Length: 217
Image 1 (cartoon, helix red, strand yellow):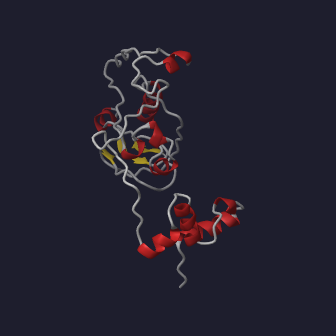
Image 2 (tube, rainbow, N blue to C red; image 1 turned 90 degrees about the horizontal axis):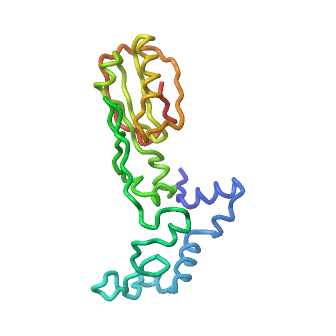
Image 3 (spheres, rainbow, N blue to C red; image 1 turned 30 degrees about the vertical axis):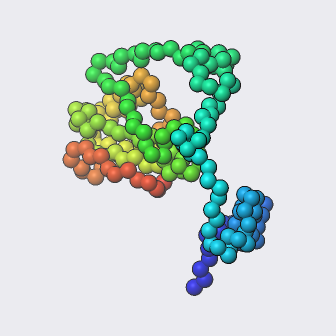
């Protein structure tokens, strides 16, 4: 059995796909030497000592680090000329959200580790693990509508299986699309018929970190 390093496999795939220029090195030693030498350190010294100690830099104000702010004035700005030039309020104003309709609640999502801020959402690595925030179906609501089935989150969407009469399913489809809380939206949905499993009640399945694209069916 031949065992290959992951970098070698990735490099071979890149060359087969015609994008070998993105990995312009013959082996991992050449790659590491390039990174270390261009960081101002000696590759030879690293190989000899096994570790490189960089110059100590202050990381807190108490250590002597100067405060820095990424603003035009390089200071804390309560009034933003940048926002004003872009057509926004230079000092953001509080806007009260509309009250939810009677019998409904706001759609609330928590901060998932892979979707903490916009900077993590646009990072391809955590985005691949969790492209969207998770959603769920209230089991009491499902029971009230006379439905049984299950719901589970997948990396690409919500997988929803429902069993019930044609009239109850039709009512749910209408509610699903037309009675969303204010601020909630559905980008895409796909429905298909499946054989009933004869389940009783409604259950919430475990979220799946992998697998095919999720559908509501």
